[in-house]
Image 1 (cartoon, rainbow, N blue to C red):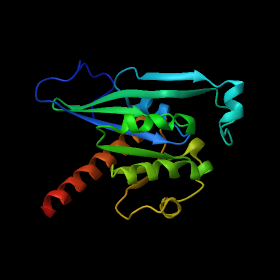
Image 2: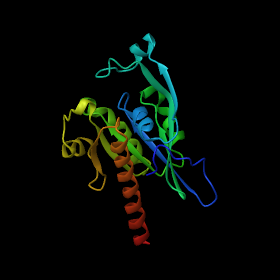
Image 3: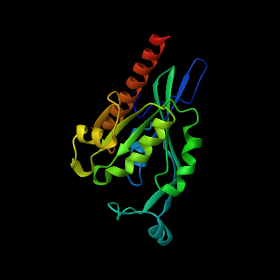
Image 4: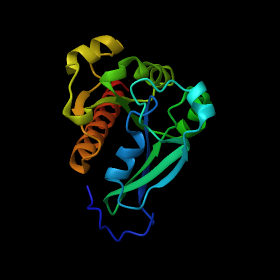
Length: 199
């Protein structure tokens, strides 16, 4: 993938743009992932968490969180002159889930971030992409190096198909986030090749 210092200005003739979603529950690290890997300054729509939000949103496990995404995060990665990835981070709170359908339009794939301190918060995202048949990978974001569950335990808990990649990551680290996106792209290529082989 291109380095953070890429001088690529935008799409050009012959360039393929791939839209990917970064999804998951509230406070799982979506904004952090987009920011860690984007070659441009990411667009963020974060607002301070208010007293009203404290009464509406479940802050269990993320009591120290002070901001929240209210619309989307946006970042970009240039793979080469002919391939650009556009990353759209979804809002995590349930009251903003109505925006997911709009964000999913045209998406080729997704990363579902899982926080094993609150593993059940990733289930809605898994269901969302399974229902829409959008290929996805599950990335277990290890906060502070803590691994509460193994990859196999997460796969079983989320009732994932055998072909869905599941991996550990630390979204604060650019290289770790890049590996997740590489796994997603490889997953998309494999699914495309299998679909063509069936024709």
